[in-house]
Length: 95
Image (cartoon, rainbow, N blue to C red; front, side):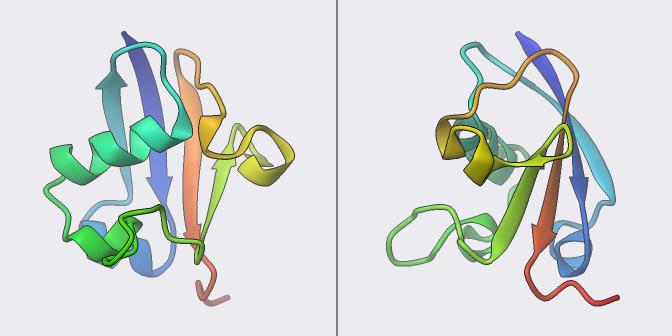
Protein backbone atom coordinates (compact mmCIF):
# COMPACT_ATOMS: atom_id res chain seq x y z
CA UNK A 1 0.00 0.00 0.00
CA UNK A 2 1.10 3.53 -0.78
CA UNK A 3 0.28 6.75 1.06
CA UNK A 4 -0.34 9.64 -1.36
CA UNK A 5 -0.75 13.26 -0.30
CA UNK A 6 -3.18 15.23 -2.44
CA UNK A 7 -3.60 19.02 -2.49
CA UNK A 8 -6.63 20.67 -4.07
CA UNK A 9 -6.26 24.19 -5.49
CA UNK A 10 -8.70 26.88 -6.58
CA UNK A 11 -12.31 25.89 -7.14
CA UNK A 12 -11.53 22.22 -6.49
CA UNK A 13 -11.15 23.04 -2.78
CA UNK A 14 -14.78 24.12 -2.65
CA UNK A 15 -16.00 21.20 -4.75
CA UNK A 16 -14.10 18.68 -2.65
CA UNK A 17 -14.55 20.47 0.67
CA UNK A 18 -10.89 20.05 1.62
CA UNK A 19 -7.56 21.78 1.05
CA UNK A 20 -5.63 18.52 1.25
CA UNK A 21 -6.21 14.82 1.74
CA UNK A 22 -4.08 11.76 2.41
CA UNK A 23 -5.19 8.50 0.86
CA UNK A 24 -3.84 4.96 0.95
CA UNK A 25 -4.01 3.17 -2.40
CA UNK A 26 -3.17 -0.45 -3.24
CA UNK A 27 -0.17 -0.96 -5.49
CA UNK A 28 0.53 -0.46 -8.31
CA UNK A 29 -0.51 3.14 -7.92
CA UNK A 30 -1.00 5.37 -10.95
CA UNK A 31 -2.46 8.84 -11.27
CA UNK A 32 -5.54 7.38 -12.99
CA UNK A 33 -6.10 4.89 -10.18
CA UNK A 34 -5.62 7.62 -7.58
CA UNK A 35 -8.31 9.78 -9.23
CA UNK A 36 -10.77 6.87 -9.11
CA UNK A 37 -9.92 6.25 -5.45
CA UNK A 38 -10.42 9.95 -4.62
CA UNK A 39 -13.75 9.97 -6.43
CA UNK A 40 -15.08 7.10 -4.29
CA UNK A 41 -13.39 7.84 -0.95
CA UNK A 42 -14.44 11.50 -0.99
CA UNK A 43 -17.89 10.64 -2.41
CA UNK A 44 -17.52 13.26 -5.14
CA UNK A 45 -20.04 14.08 -7.83
CA UNK A 46 -19.05 12.34 -11.05
CA UNK A 47 -18.17 15.58 -12.84
CA UNK A 48 -15.67 16.92 -10.27
CA UNK A 49 -12.68 14.87 -11.47
CA UNK A 50 -14.18 13.05 -14.45
CA UNK A 51 -16.12 14.01 -17.59
CA UNK A 52 -19.73 13.11 -16.98
CA UNK A 53 -20.32 11.45 -20.37
CA UNK A 54 -17.04 9.65 -21.03
CA UNK A 55 -15.94 9.00 -17.44
CA UNK A 56 -12.41 9.99 -18.40
CA UNK A 57 -10.38 12.39 -16.21
CA UNK A 58 -11.18 16.03 -16.92
CA UNK A 59 -8.65 17.79 -19.13
CA UNK A 60 -9.42 21.09 -17.36
CA UNK A 61 -7.44 19.94 -14.33
CA UNK A 62 -3.66 20.21 -14.28
CA UNK A 63 -2.13 17.39 -12.29
CA UNK A 64 1.31 17.70 -10.74
CA UNK A 65 3.23 14.80 -9.21
CA UNK A 66 6.03 15.97 -6.95
CA UNK A 67 5.94 19.34 -8.73
CA UNK A 68 5.97 17.99 -12.31
CA UNK A 69 2.97 18.11 -14.65
CA UNK A 70 1.95 14.57 -15.64
CA UNK A 71 2.14 15.29 -19.40
CA UNK A 72 5.96 15.38 -19.11
CA UNK A 73 5.90 12.15 -17.11
CA UNK A 74 3.69 9.24 -18.18
CA UNK A 75 0.25 10.88 -18.15
CA UNK A 76 -2.43 9.04 -16.18
CA UNK A 77 -0.17 5.99 -16.12
CA UNK A 78 2.42 7.89 -14.05
CA UNK A 79 3.36 5.70 -11.12
CA UNK A 80 3.19 7.09 -7.61
CA UNK A 81 5.44 6.12 -4.74
CA UNK A 82 4.95 6.28 -1.00
CA UNK A 83 4.37 9.88 0.08
CA UNK A 84 4.11 11.23 -3.47
CA UNK A 85 2.67 14.74 -3.48
CA UNK A 86 -0.13 15.18 -6.03
CA UNK A 87 -1.53 18.64 -6.71
CA UNK A 88 -4.79 19.13 -8.62
CA UNK A 89 -5.19 22.59 -10.16
CA UNK A 90 -8.24 23.62 -12.19
CA UNK A 91 -7.29 25.56 -15.33
CA UNK A 92 -9.41 28.50 -14.14
CA UNK A 93 -7.92 28.81 -10.66
CA UNK A 94 -7.61 32.55 -10.14
CA UNK A 95 -4.59 34.51 -8.96
